Image (cartoon, rainbow, N blue to C red; front, side, top):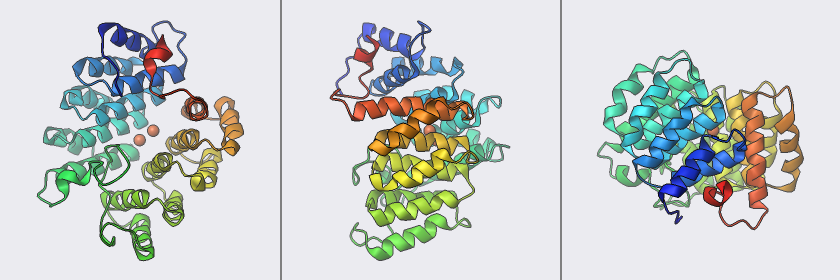
Length: 320
Ligand SMILES: [Fe+2]
Ligand SMILES: [Fe+2]
């Protein structure tokens, strides 16, 4: 994206992200955030960091996510403060730990180790995966340097684990490899990092069979694991995953972190059957705040998918 980081642009993005007018809709604040994501340098990180004073866990977890995706170690200080704040929402702390894994600096190892026994399961599981990822990235494994890059896949995200390549013939999936990956994915006795590697390999395969294998993961008891499956479904944007995502969104006994991720994935896939349910859950009083807000943001993405607007993250024109 060719966003010009002029002082005026940065000031208007800051005003939108931090809701200085007190009347900026949440979806517009998200757009400002994704525009800032594409602007390199410390200034955009400083602006994003100011957002942690907000009270929306959804917004704050997205701030942490974006800081990780920027891969700039300059963000480690603020991410450390977020992880250390035990009063902070676990979803936000989880995302801060994951972002440290994405940045992959060895200097983050002690703080991640410190929270390996955090009372919040999503936090300690994230620290475990982030530590394994940092170890992986800094090991001498032949593919380690490229494993988390987008070089071999269509996905541009920095993933919490590199897609596993075992069972693939010359990088190509076979029926057997989907079955093999599914076995690893669903094996709760294996380390999460290994299961995540199978998850991202199945995402990279992306066939209906791979999606079915991933959807079977929704029967797991780790909210973290399930929310990541919903996240990769959002990346895949395949209508084939819609029924399983709708079941997750509508399941009131499911963890809110998982339902939130399902809502956002559904907004990106944007098939017509999705819209009425997103509208319903955007306002339902019995829905947790993070689920409602995710539906609001998802509806905004839906409108984008179905409009001619050029770029979702065009926060500058959105903020203007
Ligand atoms: Fe997350
Ligand atoms: Fe999320």
